[in-house]
Length: 460
Image (tube, rainbow, N blue to C red):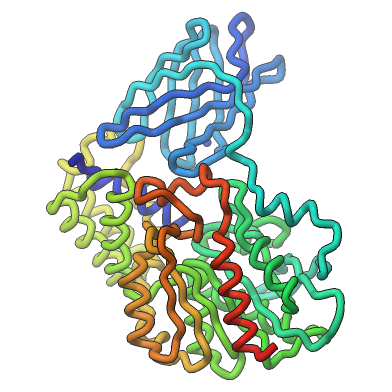
């Protein structure tokens, strides 16, 4: 079985945890272009969308196998040459147009040949039937209100859904996972928090979901802030929700996905008098080093590869360096020294992804590696629901649920067979990270079970 190189795995983990001029006349680049990138150990479909006119070039790209659509980039066209710069992923493409074929080289660390052919794009991968059904329903038994609340000098914008009849509602704050997310936790046109808010408010709950720091209509803040300040944002959201006259403050709790699950646990432990229940959706129960090592193995499996034992040791060494050093300046220096001491592992990065750039990307996710939920989990006394999908390639299902149950014996834990990190039904490990090509946003059984558990806990 092929293996994924150390530096490729590091880049993939960072992307997962955190979480792309002018045109010359004479050549027609307009259209949708599709090709297969042979990246050594695996193949990836890439799609370029090019709109060319007198004002310049509009360019976006998709990586459907990895669940990425409408990703940004800049492009310039000179004669029959296309140059694409994708700074968010430290990648470039340079190709030559011949008829309906683009022949060129995609560079991301290594140089990889990429031939694309012009095709018609039908946009089917962007269709999300569960969201469409909600948006088309003109007789919802609840209504939505645009709201704001403040924390740490930041004005957060969100949506509060309230049932149309009754009062004294039980309530839930939804907390998104790692990386910048809007109030719907939108990922590749999926809106899982829209589905959760709809399911809960149809069943008598008030639900608050909000744009994270620096995202959407929220004014101010760093979208890559560490977990601790994000936890204070969630508590500010909960306190605002409790202040609403329609809400029963004694029955208003927290539900978080991935890092949001970590935040829910953190707040339940640190604010036991304010958090009456929590729900962890694919949240972690192990420390950051173990989580990182689990991800190395699971993401390799999802890519159809096998990690090399030497690469595993390097990953663990790097994760331990990150976990042990909280000072960002010192950590930067230690990571630079680490990468410099292993030049043989980074030789194919060339000058396209420098060590400084790789360190910058790693620092964004350092708080995840530095976090150990053990003590917070031991302090959780409120009712807790923790669920994971058995094909979750980001948070290992069995290991994390077992850790949560061991540390929180009263918690309700449940694995879902054949579901991934976003609780989508997928076909085996090779489909476990293809979030965008799966049309389902969240398995209906998961939505039903969450509603039933919350109804029982809040005694509706």
